[in-house]
Image (cartoon, rainbow, N blue to C red; front, top):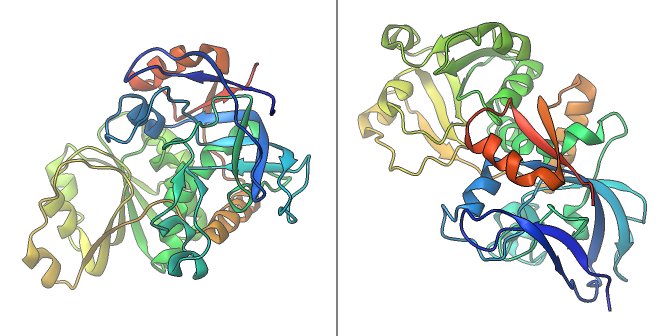
Length: 338
């Protein structure tokens, strides 16, 4: 029998996490087990903890921004070995045989399993996944900051590759939080002119240091209107409903308004606003496994990393309170202290 995994779990929606252990059973032939060193705390963990999306099962062990080392390999795993430093993000498994998987779009597989959806995640001493989703981490990237790259990082990096964003483009980033502060860094390193949209004044110096050429207050209508027809790509990282027709109007012809933030309210998008400039509205979840590897390489080459605050995992409830209060700057990473 496998050694029990020690974890932190919520017994019900929004209930405090408490020590929890479970028997993971035999390691599958295509699985690896990862000894967790660090795990990021993401807003998606908060949404799952509160069952905001109606997909949570309890007891819930959150955690899907894992950095650790492979501690065991299944009998069919030949590309990884014990001791290799890897990261694990939102997905832990996909079917590997559907048309999407065979074309490389593993993250679009209809049978893909989230690391914390119907599974126990990384707020634990160990976690398991299909070997393909355990991605080796380049030596240049620090373990204590790299976990958020496997969720927030790939979420904002993937659209740059998927939609052919060019270094000469003008790109706007809406919402400068856990996702947005990484988007600023990637877009600037990509070579683009970067416009940051924020609802909070007084952050200009911080946002410029992260990569913004220009900072615009999203509460000032005149400043927003002055950008009409000027942007090639707008990436939305916030989950708040905004004046989408106004942002659509900021796009140049053939521009794209792209959502990676989970805005729960229906989008008010006027058809003529799309037709007149042949504009597009789209969204994307994370990215391909190959794109995750490209993102890590790009991050290492350009020195891109999230701004993080650390909590020991034993203070997980304090970390959740800190995140829910909106005080986190910009990501939280938990140090496994079992």
